[in-house]
Image 1 (cartoon, helix red, strand yellow):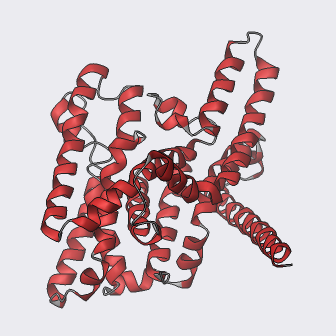
Image 2 (cartoon, helix red, strand yellow; image 1 turned 90 degrees about the horizontal axis):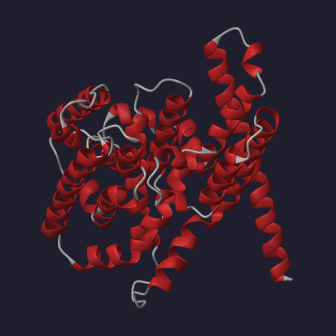
Length: 358
C-alpha cells in the first residue's frame, strides 16, 4: 500500500498530544490521540494482513501479532531495562526490605512478556516505561486481527456500520458492572477502561472498517459549506469532550463518559478528515514537519517517556530556569534519540540484507 502522507502528519500531531500530556499538559488532546493510534492500527492492518486465505488458528494469529510488534520490541526492551536499572539503584539506596525488589521484578516480567495488558492493575500497566502499555494492549488485539479482518471482508457496509455501533454500546455497557463492583476510579477500573484489550478492540475494529471503505470515504462528494460546518463541529466537540470530567457519583454517566468511549468517535472524525485532506486547516497540518514526525512516531512514543524519567531522575531540571525550556529540551532530545536509533536500526538492517545477498 502506498504511504498516505496525511496520515503520517496525523501520527505526528497525535504524538505531540501524547508528549504534552506526559510533560504536564493533561487537558489537551492526549486521550484522543491514543484513540487515533488504535484506530490507525486497525486501518493499516486491513492492508498489511497478507494471509487472507490462511486457516484461522491461534498459531497463525500469534505469528501475525508477533510480526506486527517485532520491529519495535527491541526498543521496548531497551527503554524498559533503562528504567528498571534506575529503579533498581533507587531500591539499593533507599530500601532495607526485599518486598519492593519482588514488586520491581514482577513489573519487569509483566513488561517484557507484555502480560501487563491482561493483569487488572492500572499501576502495573504504567510501570517502568509506562507508555509501553499501548504495545502490550496492541499485541493482544493483533491476536484477534485475522478473525476480525475475515469478518470485515465478508460483510457489507451497513452491517459493519451497525457492528461498530453495537461494539460502541457494548464497551459502554461493560463498564457499568466494573464500576459497580470496583468503583469508578479504582486501579482495576482504570485498567479495564484504558488498558484492557477487549475494551480497546472497538477502536481497532473502527479502523478496519474505515480501511475497507477508504476509497469510498475520500471519493464521497460533500458540499463545501457542510464540510466546514462539520469540521467546526468536530473542533468544538474535541475541545468540549477533553474538558468533560466523569461524574464521580454516577456509575451510568461515568460509563458513557469513560476515557475510551467518549474519545473514539472524535478520533474517527479526525482520521476521516485527514484521509480526505480537503479542509484548509488540515492541509496546513499536513506539512513536512508533522509528516517526518509521524514517520518517527513509533520510536518517539517509546523513547519520550524514558527521556522524561531520566531527565528528572538525574535532577537535570535544576539546570533550567524555565518550564517551557524544559519541555522544548525534552522534545528535541526525544527527536534526536529517535533519529539516532532509527539510523542505527536501518544500518543494521541494510547490513544484514547485504550479507544475505552475498
